[in-house]
Length: 156
Image (cartoon, rainbow, N blue to C red; front, side, top):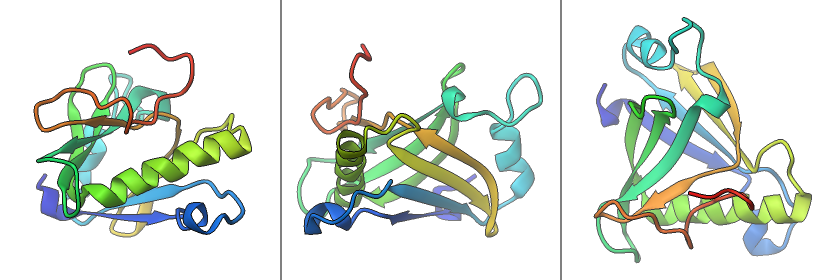
């Protein structure tokens, strides 16, 4: 699967900058490639689709932070570490999304996750997860804790 087969769309992030009513941020990842390939990667050893607790979402920067920084968003299998999908993104947009998710969690005491991620194939929902963690790594692979979304009490 190629990164070009994926697109990313975010919702519910503008309220942070306008001091609006907190709304749970959501990200939708659309895939326009071979559905069986993605479904296979999202399937665990029990032949069931992975649930939210079995996946991790991360941003890996491809250069220094700043205006126009690029990055790669990935969804991985938490147990095996295998990449399920990757796509190129504007890093500033993703960091803005993470800030909204952090603020949502603080303002709304979000017990059901700080954001939602939905993966669709040709417009049809394949999986949807409530997530509380979104890790950010620099271009050398070091965790950037200050930019990551890490729930309180979680030790990495």
